[in-house]
Every structure is written in C-alpha cells, then in structure tokens.
Length: 101
Image (cartoon, rainbow, N blue to C red; front, side):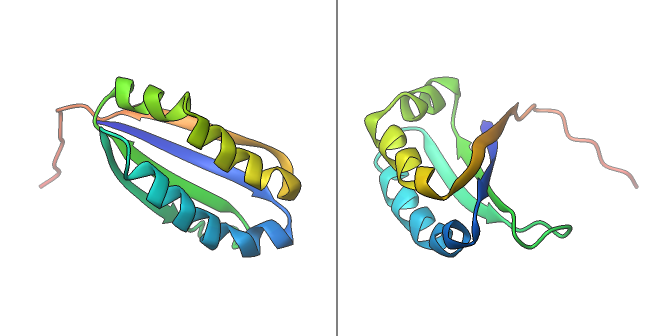
C-alpha cells in the first residue's frame, strides 16, 4: 500500500471550495485501478489547513493517477485559490506492526 498525504495552501475562498473539490476528486479517483481510499485530514493545530490522505494499492497505481489529465485538471481548478504549491509526502506501508502491551 502507498499512502500520500497532501497539504493544499488555499486562501479563504479556496478553503470554502475545498469540500466540493474533494467530492469531484473522489469521483475521479474511483475510476482508477489501484485506488483504495481518500480522506480529509483536519489539523488539530490549525483549522484553516487543507490536508488529504490518498491510499493506492501500489506505486504504479499512484503514478497512473499522478500522471493523468484528470489529476492535472483538478489541480488546475485550485490554482486561483492557491497561496503556494501543494506539498506531498509519500509513504509505503510496511508489513511490520509493533504493539506495546
């Protein structure tokens, strides 16, 4: 599994538009093989931040999405609201799980 955490830096109007944009994003992502889930992350430190977590089955499915016209078009929709370019962090989920008893 691949997890991508994305922070979008949006002005107030963009923050208001963000939930509607996430709905569009979710509908587009569901068409891509290997897409697993999307969720909005709410910062406990700052209520005006816009974070997403996307999960894909593997790197190939992430790359298919990231290199798609759908991805580019959706990112372009946020451009009028952007204060700066989004920042992404990509993680691979390992098979190791540690439990503290």
